[in-house]
Image (cartoon, rainbow, N blue to C red; front, side):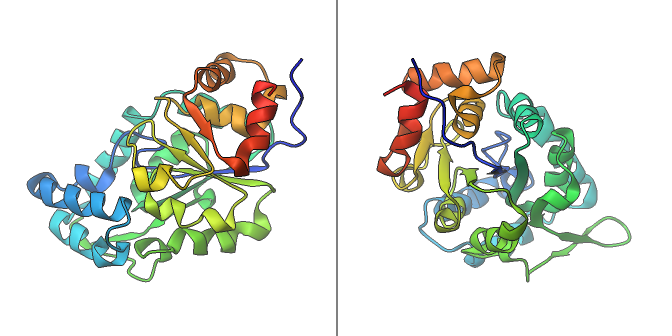
Length: 256
């Protein structure tokens, strides 16, 4: 007989790009400079250069107007990772606090969050400015999310309002940087597997679905349903790996 989890996670924080959605927003906005922007993004996500060294450069190459950013929001929704809506809905139904923490552009990220039922105050991303004609006019250069270590800063600010324990789910180095200020860092490698991130994470999900997050957050006493059952199946099939820091979670989920 499987043991029930001692406690569920009270908060789950999701990254957006390559986590809630398969889209990498800045690359979508940089059609004319895609190769250069992809290279810069890859270097940041692998920890080769710091985010603040490239954030302004990527946006200056892209110069996205209001219409392009709104269209990006729609693409986020159209390309959500499998089971994302069901997982977020089940977490919220279970009383788990769900937030989105992204280095992407705030108007686009909020479109995806709204589709998932996550209110605007529960979304942190980088504000962008437009001219009266809708043209690109810059971004919030003071945002912590436009520099290295920024996600950890935001989580520290959020902590008094979060229900513990806190789980963070993301795919990149900027997510890993916040590992020390959460109770569990889950590397989501179902879209992009970034070895420097997955090698240091507490848990790695390599399934092409966010369903395992539901099992991780609620334990084996979570509510039955298609997404929860898929998450359990992915875990049992070895699509989720654990470290010593998360061994107690693995034991509870697998009966080991």
